[in-house]
Length: 296
Ligand code: MN
Picture 1 (cartoon, rainbow, N blue to C red):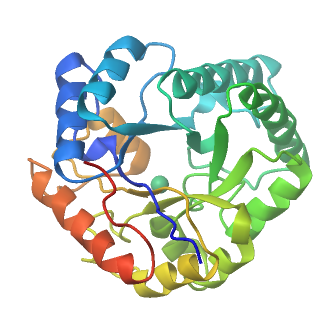
Picture 2: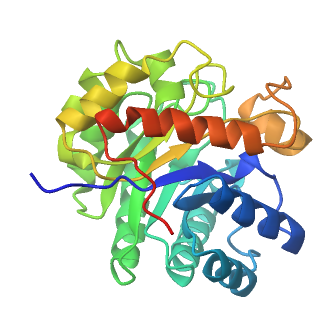
């Protein structure tokens, strides 16, 4: 069997909630120094991200990048307001451009609806609007070779895709080859019955992975069954990206904190130790997966 390598990344909020020159420099340098292959740039407005600066810094440190974002009420593509849907499509297409301009491969996250607590279940019409819009975005992304990852998140953050099974059904209706399932162990721990069967159900349609603890704290310090999860990834021959996520009020500001309900200081700055520990944890999973550092 040919050796496969899972690119290992880290979510930018471990370092910073902003993307100024200083923040970008620090995040990129520290990601590299902690032994990661890529940075997942998250929550940055794709309309205003400084692509030139980011490209230069990535090249300086020989680091890869992927981008994640979450739609909001103003850009919710499940909305019955056509202007809101159009705003969402514009934002997603600009984000696809940013991924391509940064030589990234994936745009992932809650890109099929808003990240918010909904007051009612998603209707068939909400779901259909989301699918129609993402079909257009997926077609748009084909030109630049960008893959879209649908992040399955818990019930308090979406009413559309809470389980891998719902994401697979959505993909069946979407019918686009450049869209994959994005699983996150934090959300799986809330919504799934176990850490194995969702991965097996996805098989080759699993394309992006977030590893995070049930309380969003340091990797390996909580209740998530990583052993079962990594064994399942190995069983389906998963060779896609694995990005570490952890959030603390020590880094993310009030706006970002409230979006994800980060109310506590799960760890203190600086994040170097947290990042290095998570990297070692993932390296230890290398007996099942190839997460060995490939960089120079
Ligand atoms: Mn996630």
